[in-house]
Image 1 (cartoon, rainbow, N blue to C red):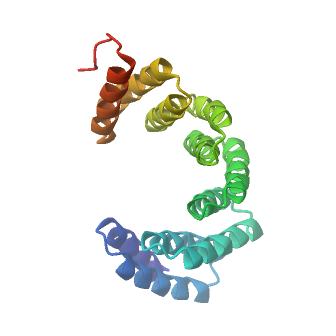
Image 2 (tube, rainbow, N blue to C red):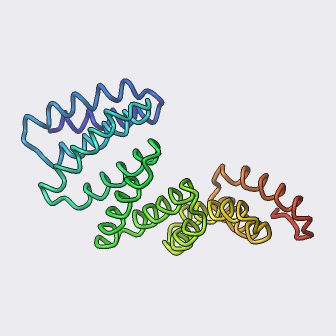
Image 3 (cartoon, rainbow, N blue to C red):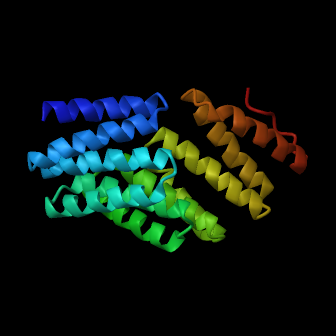
Length: 220
């Protein structure tokens, strides 16, 4: 098990360093070891990491296969934490395939478990992802309702993302002033937590305010 953990940790580092192909090999070796020990929960964990590594090289087919196997094992072992992660990963994967209804189904299942576990960050991520997928489906008003929930998740980064996504949706609806206000709040949070997204949001905010011919001062 120590060797399997070492290989998994190595795989995570390799992903961070931008070497997903090496990470895939590390996770495969880790998986083969953990399968020999009959550590089902450990196997589910490695499968999740392997799925993320495949996702890095846009190999959606293998990525989905890993997440589905992770979900199956997590349910068999009653591991709610990994089940919630697997459902979230599947939701993201299907949204990238533009299978939006299936994506929302998985995100809503993730949300249900996250709330039962009291995991506010995962709850916020699920709510935000649902809102984003509805936006991609062209259901802007429904998207905004979900994004409003995301803002109360208690996760500052999630709140900023929700505000920014909502501002984009409002801007598309022609509600320029409200979009500008949401973007300003998003910028304030991004800037406070020193997120690189602050620069992009400020640029968009200035363009929107110029279009709306508003006299409100820009954030400093």
